[in-house]
Structures are given as C-alpha cells and as structure tokens.
Amino acid sequence: MPESITITDNRTGESIEVPIVEGGVDAAAWRKLLPNVWFLDPSFSTTAATTSAISEVDGENGILRYRGYPIEQLAEHSTFLEVAYLLLYGELPTSGEYDVWVHEITHHTFIHERFRKRFMESFLHDAHPMGMFVSTIAALSTFYPEAKDIEDPENRMHQIVRLIAKVPTVAAAGFRFNTGMPFVYPDNNLDFATNFLSMMFKIAEPTYQCDPAFARALDLLLITHADHGQNCSTSTARVVGSAHTDPYSVISAAACSLYGPRHGGANQAVMEMLYDIGSYENIDPFIKAVKAGETRLMGFGHRVYKNYDPRARIIKQAAYDVFEVTGSNPLLDIALKLEEVALADDYFVSRRLYPNVDFYSGLIYQSMGFPTDMFTVLFAIARTAGWLAHWVELLEQDSRIARPRQVYTGSQERTYTPINQRS
Ligand code: ACO
Image 1 (tube, rainbow, N blue to C red):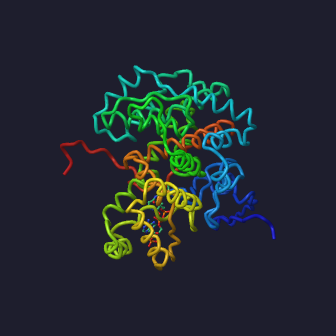
Image 2 (cartoon, rainbow, N blue to C red; image 1 turned 45 degrees about the vertical axis):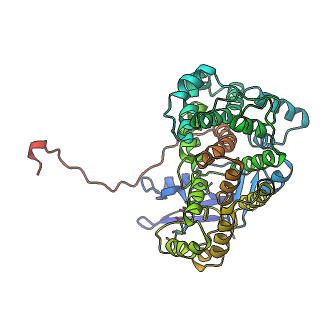
Image 3 (tube, rainbow, N blue to C red; image 1 turned 180 degrees about the horizontal axis):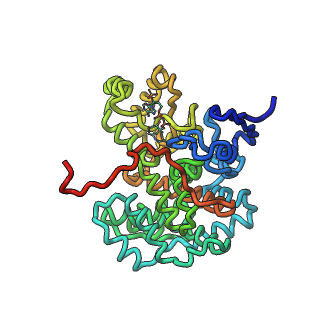
C-alpha cells in the first residue's frame, strides 16, 4: 500500500499523487494542482503550520513528551530550569551545563528600577496582572533595542536568558503593586520557584522560607505548563516571530493570546465556576445547563486531547501534596464530584471531554495564596520557555512570513455612492 494520497481536480480530470511523510502531506502539491483554490481550515484543526521537534502531543492516547522525554518522567525527576534548557537546546544538560544555566538565569532576574517605578507603577491600582504582564514584557523591547538583531544566535540566547529570568520578577511586581505591598527584590540565593514565591509573598523576614512542598508543587506546575505543541499562544509566537519581530514583542503577543478564557484564562474560569456552583446540590443543575449549551464545564475538553490530559493527572496528585500542608481546599470536593459526574455522563463521554491541565491547577494556586487573576500569569511564566524554544526553532528553519489565505465571501465589485445619495 503506497504511503500517499491522490488528489483529482474533477473539473479537468488532472490528478496528483502526494506522499505522506511523517503523517503530513505537503501543501505545495495542492497549490500546484489547484492554484487559487484554498484549503479552508478555520482554527487550523487540520493544518500543520510547521514541523517541530520540541514537544509531541498524542491526543488520542493522552501522551505528552518534551524532546522525547515523557512528561511523567520530567515531572518526577526534573526541575523547571532543566526542562527549559531541554526545550531550548534539545538535550538534557550535563551537571556543568546545568550549573552555568541556573547561574545565568539567577543573575538576570532584576529589572531596571526606574522602569518598574515609572512604567509598572503607572497602571491603575486594580489593573489585571495579566494586562500589566503583557504590556511590561512588550515595553522591555524598548529597553533592550539590541534584541532586534535576531540573526545573531549569541544575542538571541542573551535575550532568552533575560526573558526566562525576568518574567517571574515582572509577574510578582505586578502582584505587589496590585496589593499595595512593597516590591521584593529577587534573592539570588533561592531556587527559581522559591525566589518567585519570595517575590510574591515575603513580608519582613530577612530570608523568605516556605514549605518545600510548595516550591516543588510550583516547579511541577511550571514543568507541566512549559510547552504544548502548536497551541494558540505558541502559534501566535510563531506568527509574530515570522515577521522577524524582537523576542520581547513575540513573548508579549503570545501572552496576549494566553490571556483568553478559552486558553490560559481557563484555570481562573474554573475557580469562578467552582465558586458559582458552591455546593454539591448545585452540581446536577449545573451539568444540566452545560448539556443544554447554556454554559461550559471549564477545565474540560481540549482540541487535541480526546483522552485524559496527562498533565491533569500529575497536577491532581500535586494538589493532594499541597493540601497535606495547607489542609484541603473545600472547592476540591466540588471539583472531584464534577469530574466523577461528567466522566459518567454520555454528553461528555460521547464528545470525549476529559479534565485538562487547568481543571486542578487553580485549586493548588489558590491554596498557595495566589489570587485567581494571577493564575494566567503563572502559566505565562512557564510557557515563556516553550514560546522561546519555538521562536528559536522558527528562526533556524528557513521560514517565510506567516500569511494565510482567505476564502472571500463579501460583495462583488460595486460603485461608491456619495453619502447624500444613500438611503
Ligand atoms: N463543556 C461543555 N461542552 C463542551 C466543552 C466544555 N468544556 N468543550 C467542548 N464541548 C462540546 C462542544 O459544545 C461541542 O459540542 P457539539 O458537538 O454538540 O457542538 C463539542 O464538545 C466539541 O467542542 P469544540 O468547541 O468544537 O471543541 P474545540 O476543540 O473547538 O474546543 C476547548 C476546545 C476550547 C478547549 C473547549 O473544550 C473548551 O471551551 N473548554 C473549556 C475551556 C478550557 O478548559 N480551556 C482550557 C484548554 S487547555 C489550555 O488551553 C491550556
């Protein structure tokens, strides 16, 4: 059986045979046979926009691997910074490489004082921290104009280190400003996750200390959110990057996409949904409303996973580890019951809707003291590593500017009518 498909233009009888290579069919053959006939695929459900060697998502079987390593193994043995290195360089670091990498990231965490005070503190006191985050990251491009030189791999890597190092600082600065708390400077003696928790929650103690279970749970959440194929925000990063825009603007644009409730905003939406449901007796009416199409069960369903999201399983376990320290979160019982009801209901089963990465992550964040409007910012900190890995991959591929076609459905040519002659 040949590994190919044949496309026939029934208007002319002309055919073309196209090989299937690694599960993909090259669109160039389509273009050759059918000039000016576009493959209509809104939301890109059937379109591979690129080849990529970074993360493999097998939605049918509920598998996620970064550079070939199963997410479960990375979650058990690795750290977020090691995973960031893996995503960017393609290989796990040796211990020497790892030490240099951690040192580099740790020593680029500060942001310019005047920039923070003049720029970040000019927001309204109740500005959404994600709005502050995307604006601040974009504004950093004015601070590092040399970042525009995207052709130089060394310069690129310098900006990458800055971005991975500074996103937690920007995120925490937004939170402290929102809550009227003084800014906490990065502490280079702490690991990546603990330093972020310190910048978020330190009060007057000389050195911030937290239960190691908290830092580990946060690191785990960062690992599981670090990359995920050509998702909406990564695709945004690649589209913007294809115009050869600087990396700060690329990451800001990707974060804008993540901001939406259908994407990275979903864990905030999950918490709001759990609050609204409030108690067990409201679960059945809520499920009924979902089935009637009046609302959605947030944290359920995924474009690619038609099976249990492997990240949701890891995060559900991490939730129990955190609750051992904090005591249970009362919303957990509602979430568990919702999951049980949904997984036994034909509406969800027949549509293959399972919990996704965001169903349980908000519960952990909340128990650790993060307000709901910080949840998407936490996601952005993690995904910055993935976005940057894709940005580098894109620049190293011989890519052209992203420029989809459209199937035009508007008016045919008509003649302009002066305003006083229009009815
Ligand atoms: N609750 C109820 N029904 C749902 C849900 C849901 N969460 N998700 C999908 N469906 C239904 C749809 O109504 C549709 O039913 P129909 O065939 O009768 O019309 C069917 O399942 C297919 O849904 P689509 O919208 O076509 O699925 P799509 O792949 O476009 O959407 C998405 C994926 C956006 C994630 C969707 O499942 C959703 O809105 N989920 C809730 C939000 C969420 O949790 N987002 C986080 C995703 S993970 C991430 O971004 C990190």
